[in-house]
Image (cartoon, rainbow, N blue to C red):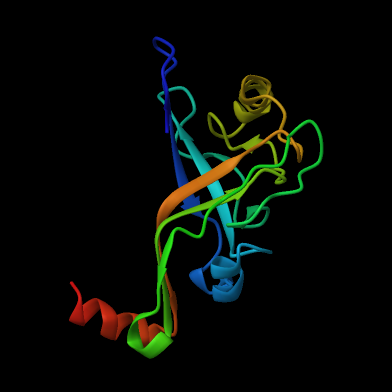
Length: 167
């Protein structure tokens, strides 16, 4: 994502906040359009010349937890419910993989910690609150994540075999 505002343009990069072993996928919820299909810990790296290289919203010790669904959300106000989509489903490798083309996973009930590390040691005491004021609220019910993608979920060996057979 990029936000442009003259000299204060800002690049933001979504990063995995914890090891991939912390990611949870439910093939049943993905296909069934209910519950959490993908739970993933993320952090957002904010970059521009003034913020330095260590400015983040979320961290490894305090990640943003997205609990994405292909169903309908039930967020706190002021957000309204939104719906995802399982996309077009197929089941390769004798059903050991759920392949979802055009899946839309959504979550609009998540909270995010404030920015930290902006500008480097000491300067962050001034810049972190400024960045947080510009970002607005990070409380649940004020944020939305929408992932429009293709999902292959299943045992690693089955996904690897499918990828080798269908490059």
